[in-house]
Length: 483
Image 1 (tube, one colour):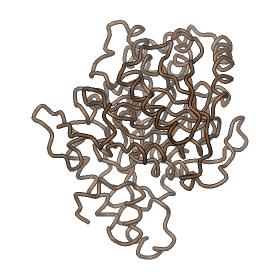
Image 2 (image 1 turned 120 degrees about the vertical axis):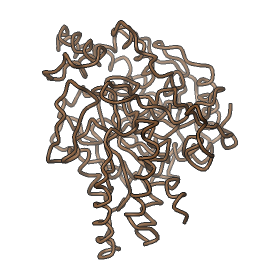
Image 3 (image 1 turned 180 degrees about the vertical axis):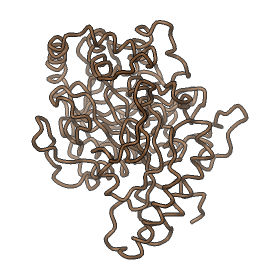
Image 4 (image 1 turned 135 degrees about the horizontal axis):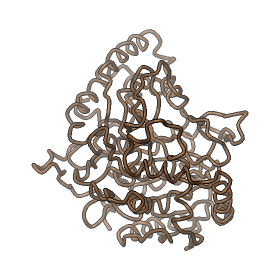
């Protein structure tokens, strides 16, 4: 296989080549490191690149020669870790000047199973400051740019993960999600992203279980990679208030095992105005699901206001016990100032009221189909308002469809669903029942097969070089992806 084609393979395909001895770990990791060094200066997806990853790859090659028949599933495959997670002996910045930049001698609970699965960690991926914003524009490094249009945002807070996947710097990436931070960049960058059920993955920050909004999760270019990555990342968190029962069989084996589903479709939110192109993509997908034999019906979400949701994020981000808040960006500092004015009991009561309002409605269908984000990717700097409260409120509209999923703890996925009239990716969101990742993945596979999406942004695969202005030449997508 020509080395130039390696980055277009899925993680599972790359792992298969390594196991077969068709390519070495050093060749595979080295190829991706070359792409990272060439492309990252223009995209700022990585905040740290581990050139020592080649030494790790050499060790894995020696191990492969000794015990080829007993290798972990992703032996030698490169992966990136979001810079909100701790990778041993690597500096963690959290996208912030308000946090001491420490290199700790251990991996956190999210990273440990990825190492055991054989991945080679090649770097830390960009995040918004403390994961607070749905765009990735911290002041610790340049903004993360969208590979589809370098003048637009890659989304956030897992913007580095989305940009690295869409530019084929990585086959898979780890992300995290407290209000849409996996699904929003997946939508803007045209990749697949899965937020698991509450309790499916280890609780990295040991936050209170019942009202936790945050979880880690897989981001990838294919559904199969995401399913296999979820199998690796998932654990039974026994002893915790909320933990997910293990699936009856591995998630990666759920393909084709789908019964007739009741699917409810929503195209509007009381929190934001949805673009016509996005509505059209949702309706196209709904018609496709109906042709598959599922029961599809229109629905509406309960009434709510942004003022009800914002205090939950103020507490999640602004309540962190940091001593350097004066060094934070204005929006993050504002979240902290607002959090100090909140009474914990009041926020808990607000949380419970919202759950009581949304959970019974969401339980009336097997799957909900919504836009992931009301719009396509915004221009860089769109939320650089002088008033941080206004800026956060404007940015929060991007989470109009994703935030309620974190509130209820349900699993949800972003799937690419075509392009806007201006050639930007549109994402649709599938919301499953609690611990219902199996149906979510099975339907995702069916949609991926029926409505294929581009694996990378134009110009980053075999589409030719970028234009002089830094944007990518837009090639026509596969049949069926245009409105």
